[in-house]
Length: 382
Image (tube, rainbow, N blue to C red; front, side, top):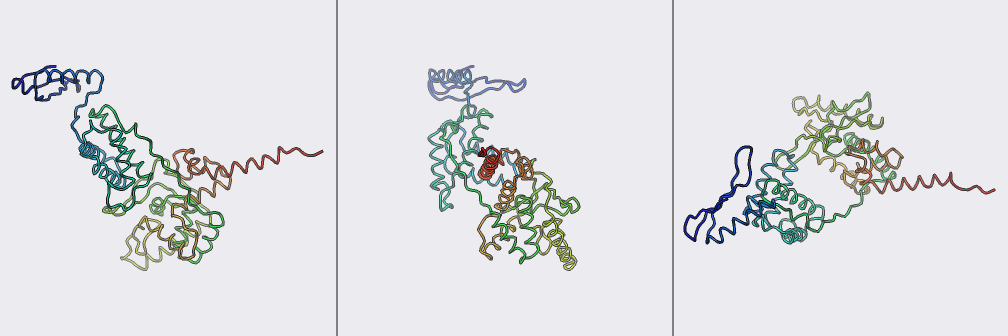
């Protein structure tokens, strides 16, 4: 280490070796303005930081600069929708605390930022504040960014870990009861065969909306009564509709479907083939199971609109399209199917996720077990 005088009692150069990159020595050099005594104090401060492993190479970097660097490195490793969502969250972070230097970021600053998200002071386009779930997403992203800063040597501590945890209240699952399903199936018979196929396959397989619109006819095995879920489609504004991999490796799965659903799919395929012949060169040759009337890939939002149209027309209980997935899984649970089988069929990474999401339905099943066990354990009167 060295303090070299550049201008007497006004300017000093501090040269500090901080480690090695392979065989190349890494040095920290900074210009210090002031007296020699203060320059030596700064040199001693650097010694202490190096000894305690708290030295920060870019302690003047702002949160905005860090996020820009982090996003740039993440860009090629994220899906289009995820990257766009991260960009939106990062914009909110930068609008509020982007100008603050990393060394000055503390718990109070971060907690104030999360409070701003609740009152929507960060993004004026939002009429109401963000939900707890969305705020938790911001919190998670801030943690990841600051942890990267530590990894890269820009910080030695992540203040976000000391922020009061953001609680997200679990929402009640939207799904149909067996009676609701019966009513839906009844009215479906008055609807186009395409609508019947979309709704029935979603209810039967419990697949996600993007998995449904991502299916091709090659994925349907009429002989084995299975569908092969191995991809999905997604829509992002500015990018359009595109194919992507499923949510996770365990989301790739073979699902057996009912004879009823297969029968409807066969009828739908016949109608689709007839439309292809009728339109000739106007047919767009999508290989998807579900297409537009002109053979283009069906928009991933279309199944939701089909369901909403039917709900409104027949005044059924209002649920989301994802609610059909919840309905499928809840019906399997109530039928006494093993949790491991349900979890694998749903494409969950492990059975604990299934238990966590559908705990209420499993609780009902456990109560039924107790009731049945009581029949064995009751003392018979003599």
